[in-house]
Image (cartoon, rainbow, N blue to C red; front, side, top):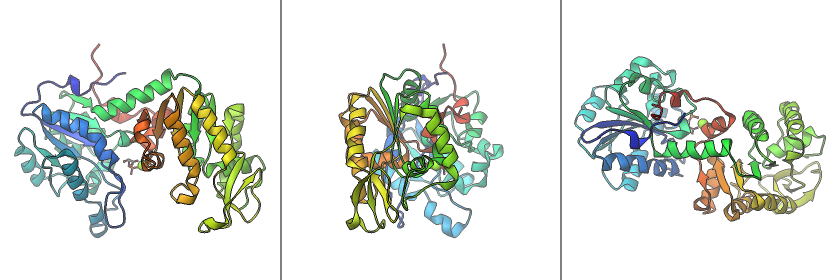
Length: 398
Ligand code: 3PG
Ligand code: MG
């Protein structure tokens, strides 16, 4: 059922809007944000609310803090607040608490156009427990609730479910980002133009069984790459040398191969090395991978074949890199496919953190129809999992 959006919100002048965003961004060991895509993706919602005279109260989690105050310092929202302030071009006030008197005072002091960022929601045990009393404290702070955290929509954390539940009667809508993600994914799932090609890569088959099954029922072709290739090849009794294989998932791989039949295309050649840290040993092999060698990328014949399928498609969905793309000598397959998507006259949707980051690194993100901010959420939505978080959002009026 279509959800209400920012356009459905009443007059916001002088109102406080509680916005759940997904600012769970990757950081390096020193705490620097290595990719701010999720922060940039929330800007349209924040700007729209500010333009309409609201005060915006932002809440997010960051990483998976363990409840150890010393170690958890690395999960504070300060770097996120600083980056948001730069990107937004207006002051962002950050409070060091999740709930409590300090938060209440800061929220009550807000004026139209103010932006307040709360501390990492997961510092409070109530967040991941979906605790109602915890949620009630947020609910009291806002005149309206906006869910713009697509990347977290598959979670049942308090800020995603119990907070909007506690705000029943006040407007509860999705933000611009969530509306866009849902629109494009719904289009992909309900009426894709054909040929519809899926590209599946990444390390593990086991992470994506439901996703692969869901797609096999819908697509015309599934192109396989990444380390999951070797589990599929091994399941077919092929030689994979020392490549990474999920030995306990061979049955699952066989089941998926039987389910997909001719729709599933596996690589015909591979880039192989003797050791991961020895790119100078790299060579291309067709067919089986010999003992003592490890597959790290798809080979040139596979790249050509996959490129042909992609440029002939009208809809393409891609999740998971083709090889160990983060090491430059092994990134070619992923790069060639990203370029093929950029060249295709198709609706192209890229999902999953790694794949999205790869496409950005290649400078090709703007050439895609849509790069999802969801990792797990993207996979689960395509699988058809109903999201409790979205069930709390008001439906569009008929
Ligand atoms: C994500 O990046 O998957 C979301 O932000 C949710 O985070 P989580 O997987 O730690 O729940
Ligand atoms: Mg996750």
